[in-house]
Length: 233
Image (cartoon, rainbow, N blue to C red):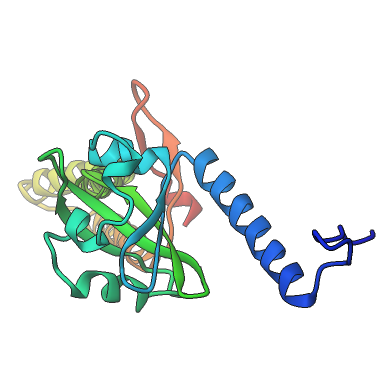
């Protein structure tokens, strides 16, 4: 594709072509920012805001774009903390963003996550995500999952241990009745003791399987309740 001549009718010089390439890339970046529903802004070498998208304007609650452009990033998101921009840019290339409680210009206190999406010519592209309540939600979800896992474990153990324990109880009662006879049947007592011993060993092995399991599978029980499928361990 032929290069567009400059005002003198000559093809653009290398520096002019580079400037046009940079300008085109900048326009594409700005278009991408405007289309992104997540907060994005450009911060220059001095830590001042050079460009923001609509999501940032809405998040901060300021009157419009002009209320943010040219302002130090720290004055909007860090109460003037000059180390704030350094703390963000130091994480460039890392997967873990910087999370911080922020008092926004509209007076709202939010927990925001800041990460560097890229940098060029001293300008950083920073993504801002509102994660207010996210940590509490994850903690609550983890607690709920633990409760469900414990309930499934207890239900599975109760279901699988109940039968052998019932047999043990009945057998022990029969032994007690047999011992009350004038002449107890020793062979019968030994048979009952062997039955109890076998059942106790079954329960022991069952508990060992549960203790050694690295994962678990549940099965449908009563009224939609799910219990640990010990047979699959």
